[in-house]
Image (cartoon, rainbow, N blue to C red; front, side):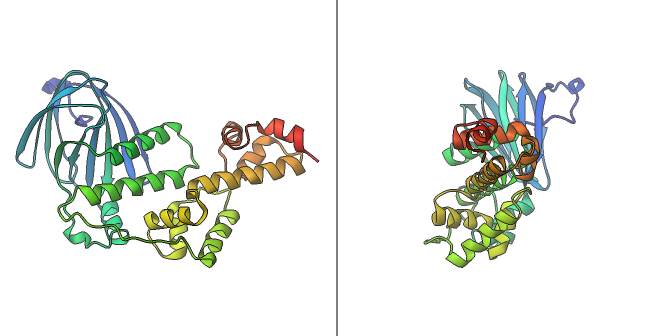
Length: 292
């Protein structure tokens, strides 16, 4: 569970392959290593390592003055706070996710979402923990990163905020409570958000853009939005893009690829995928069936 990209095999450290993606507020790497060892430390980013190996892997780990040896099973997590040196030795074929979250981002989530003094924020170094919420969110992020779509910023932002909030709630020294907001968004605010989405449907709308309209945190915005209309901001955005595409398919002779781009999709195939998920038809079949 160590990023050894700057290390050499001449030092006796194993080499490995990385699938590296940096999007939204995080860096995600898929590490696949033969048996080996290595050191790791980041000054300005907190790091999660999540085992993906199908069979338990034995690790010896040293961080924060503590040594730990154990068999990591799939889904189990190692937390390494920023500026915490980590040494790892593993036996067997390693397969894990490495997720890095900037300290500045975590501090902003603590201030805006949990109403916590970020200056006193202390993320705890932890070995071999289980957290189903963090594991599930990490796997959704991994799946989304692999899609390499340019218009999924809203969904990535939502997942990243959920990951950060869970990390702060369960793995810091203070264990802050999450404020409770009930009842959804007031009609005036909801209309303001829906009008914004409709106006900028062709752009890569960010969760922070929508939350900023109402001067609330991204995490709380997502929860209130779903309470208001029953679906997430990302789901609503996808629906509205498909609805606009349906109107253009019915009323114009424009190329489907041009319609896709105007509605905020990255390609003809991307439109087709989303269109079929929501209508059970391809754009071409829909145009043949419904064009006036």
